[in-house]
Length: 322
Image (cartoon, rainbow, N blue to C red; front, side, top):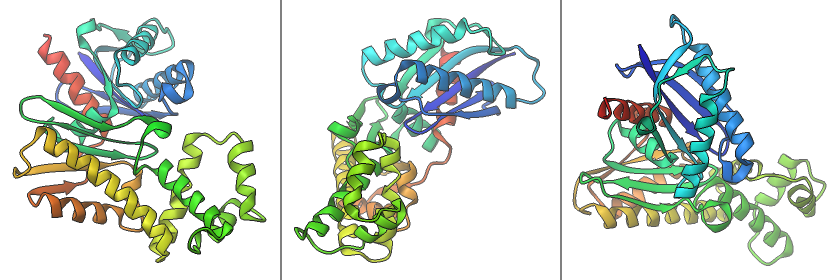
């Protein structure tokens, strides 16, 4: 029997599922980050390999080596032709890797490499017509209508974009704390909370933490939880940061709706990513604001994980090319 692999790779982790033709997940594995734009090609390749091996190792009652006939990799940072070629090279290397307990029957037509937004969309709703608002370390809004027309907004990375993301919330929080310390802006509990969380003698020591400890995007993004907590406790400055993030995401989602959907049609919007688990009800704020603009929109949490969406897309490749 042949099987498929679905892989979801992002800025913090890589998840792989082994799936059979009945859509049943037989094995699941996790590894480190696989956004090659941030961590480089060798580290991305290692994470993907480790996630696959973990999924294979966790598969029970299957004779090994396992025959893989289709694969879908939905990866953060993969949106251009040049990016896809990089990942194709990684897949080719995997097929020659003797360490994996796999036999490959993988024609080029059965390899799908796409942005992680597509697999989040398919996994979120179980089919490919809706909008996904994926917000974690970074952010992207992606939609696909009944005619197969797609629209992407955002996903330009932490320097050029990622509005509404954990990274941008964290940076805005630190900036607000320093402005308050300077006396340029309103007082905020963010000053004391950042000091306590990072064990700083003074908020001035943020300079040493951020600039001299080689903190990467993921570690900085993790500080969004401080802004979230302070906002949940009622701090006005922190709540303004959250409201600004919400409005950026509403604007991005509205752009997708107006570009490829009838604004008056019934439409599900899937929200996925760590930011939506906030204490300060960021999800509720986003839903209320979007529904106010588009009353027939329903904002939902994913029905399945993005990795499952990758598996479904791999199965579609397999069945379409049989």
